[in-house]
Image (cartoon, rainbow, N blue to C red; front, side, top):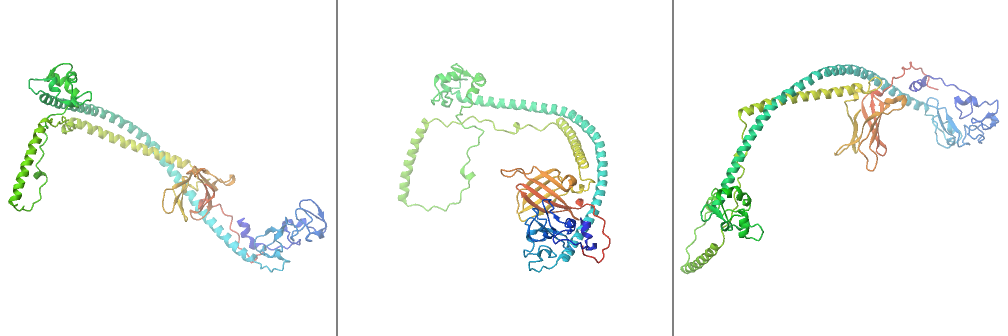
Length: 528
């Protein structure tokens, strides 16, 4: 088509006698020496009824140059430009539809012939398109050669990686064995260290419990006869078992295991565990620091000197002081009847001895050796995984369908963006399409690579991206990317012709077809 249009200036105008509105290709149907047969074969009429402004044929073919038949067609010759068919209804309607003005021959309208100017602009456009096609195709051939070289290099690298993978696998297995061998003595030494520490911890805890039990026994043994009796146990009502607030004789005897009294050994072995959580010491623990004097904790601010008071005020204060002292004596007498404050037995708080001590030199040596073996194994394993991933990527890229000659391969590792008023569209060929709000926000998937989607005769003219983010109460988003010939690779447009179905256009040299041969130098003829 490009060649035909570019050769338009070389064509001579051929004038063939034919009725108005008939094209050169149909002129042989209109022979004035015999009756005219409608093109649909529905009827025959005398030739003088052709273009008589009366519609005789159902298909309107007897009135190609008038507006008599609404379903007829008028042919614009448009010498110097492209011929055109228009509806017969537009003939002599006062509007110039043909660039040569032949459709308005009897309307009183004078139409300027613009065919030559249109033809000139059309030829310029076609020449520009032809130049783009030629340059794009030149770049396409370079892309094809680049892919051939790159494919050979990737194949060579793949072969090297596959060969190196076997030695890496052997190395990983060797280091795995060395790691497991180094971890055995490490585990034994660490287990032994923990066992010794736990035994020491248990012994220390038992010693603390024994100390608490001895202290409680001494507090309960009021008469210091070396035994705790039922009556002595009843002095601790917090040991009440039935919830009435008092420890009865029966409850106390039950706590003593049915005996009337217990010695220190039996108390420590049997009784203390049963009462430990409820028991409250009668005195403050000796290891707790005494409440510090206020002057030591909070330094007093210097007070201004107090002026001496008159004698009468002093007498009144003496009387008040005597009354207060008398009141305090009464309070002291009452306090003698109130039991002393109870303090729970102090559970040993975590100390340094509750923390596992550092490993001994031999155990630490085992740990260091095992850790070094683990590090070497993990490093080799990471290297193997990296090699395996590189092999997978290379195999996928080498086997990918990048077009008849691999011309689209250069798009594989690229991404292209198009910014509109609302969104930034991003196309990563053979991977994904996404859109992101221009003013910020999370991207939305418009589909991931599906397949080539062009027609059978031009499969590589379109790409299909599927299974994008689902629309609200609708299907998953998808995108068709139409590939157009261009000297540069750029996304030119993005639209949404149907809900959740996007259409994107990508210009690329890889889509440029082989151009037709350049036409010979044109002469001065510019008429068809």
